[in-house]
Image (tube, rainbow, N blue to C red; front, side, top):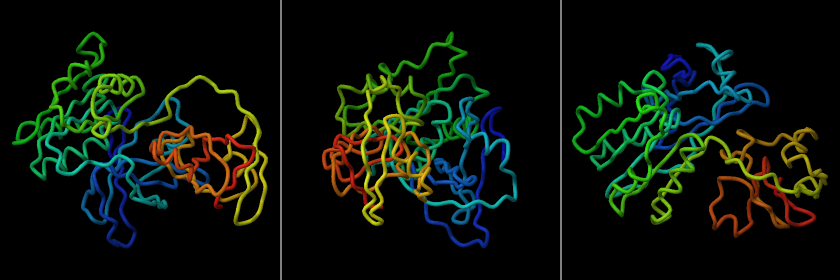
Length: 310
């Protein structure tokens, strides 16, 4: 464990018996079972000493729901934890003519793995790294060192405290990218909103992002519905103020889950009957239209009953 900034810890995870770990791809994340009922997903920044180690970086969140607080305050060198993965919901497109990557704060974790991969492949890239200040920018020394030696990339940094607290101008930045460039962004909600607006005129297949949490939306008017578990035949009543996952856990059903905000995909379950009310930020437009999967931590049902393969 290494402190990268006042609020970011680098954590290197090593297999107990040195068994080779699954090779990680840029943008991959792993799921850490930090404690009973506390599973969280973190991007793989690198495979330090690969293939027997993964490195992640965890920022202490003031609104932590337990994950980052556990890593910073409870997890210690020598602790043994279960890890699953790697999985990828934020893939780096191979053979892109140019890649423009935007990172805000701890959003550098998946982006930095992508930059390193592009550099190793000799593909053209531009990284824009924004943070509140230099002291809060994890991996900044490594990134600036790469900027000095790269033959195919460029690094742009933006620190709010050096610009009168003004955020980076993403509209101008994206306008400077080639029309066929692939764009990537990971950062806080305001940055992602500005990124989506700036990229609105682009080919949507070339615009990629990863969220820390679901964007804030107006509270919908929810109603109760039933969920049938196909394998056991169990029928669950889902009240208007509870999620499917909440009720499942209350009933002692051992269901996988992670973020509980519809951004990690761990709790996605196949749908056999009924029509989900999709409220996640994981499923593609095609997946939503197919209605073959529901993310039970946040999505609901448009029909009176939903039968899932569990």
